[in-house]
Image (cartoon, rainbow, N blue to C red; front, side, top):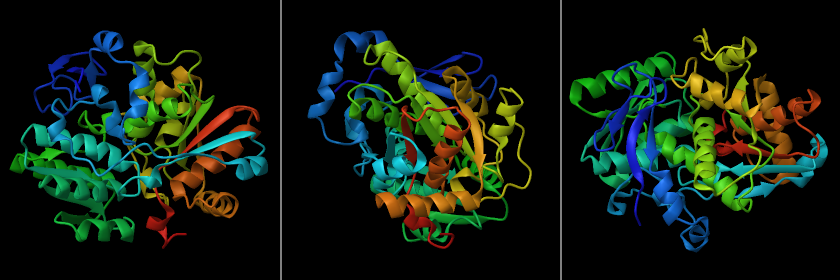
Length: 388
């Protein structure tokens, strides 16, 4: 297999960087950089029909991922998670075509496995031996697992109130767990400080270009699993934003490759009422979000007071004709319970937020009862037993 990874590009100022250098953010404006591909050549050489004969994991899309040598792939079988048709729940909510893509089926029980598989594989290709990451929980557990698989050393910085399950997940690996008094942004400061001091590679959300590439495979999978069609709406729980950003990037790539056509799905950004900087920015019709003071929510993955990729998340919402709304912690738990009672799926609170949001969006007239609606459950409820 051949990767068509060609270069890195700043999403803000457009500066181009070589694909061979371990660059994290733009050296000119400090904004997010993306991995880019020679899509014209790929279009003439790669058919979407080839994927059905490949292994059911995210590396089936190797040609559109940033690792150049497949011997450097670090995989635990992540990706190609199921899409469930949630008829019982849909009937209850008033939605006739409700789908749930369940990322809890990933090896580390969350969608973070995708990003870490891609990023650790690339770091291995660069021959870098130590990595750091700030994490609200699941990203730390995923990095610990993939670094262990790769034989690399990882350092995880988590807020002290991160879920107990993810703290234990990290502590029983060979990773170094550092608990931080503060929020994930404070953990990020310490993570990047250690990386700069020791020459490690820091994997802070969207502050390097590779985790988003793993996350974008959700977009490729949604299209392939639905017969190379896309739903009318995708509802995504949003913290740092690599999920919604990655899916939107995948949609644009697949359009350029000629693999999909027609109307793009509306992208809906869902945040917790106690930490909603992107919803606030959307309501103010801004492209950038102000940092949220004193963020509070039981959904650890959504407790992100500021995101470097705010403009990319909001661009996806604006360009798609979507929206951004909040749900409360109580509503998250209510809809986690409703979903397991009706569908047998034990969603994480973030997943429960998307179920609740689908009802709110329907009531607001932002989605239609006959639309195909796809919800993303980003992780397993079993990691949140103390709050559920």
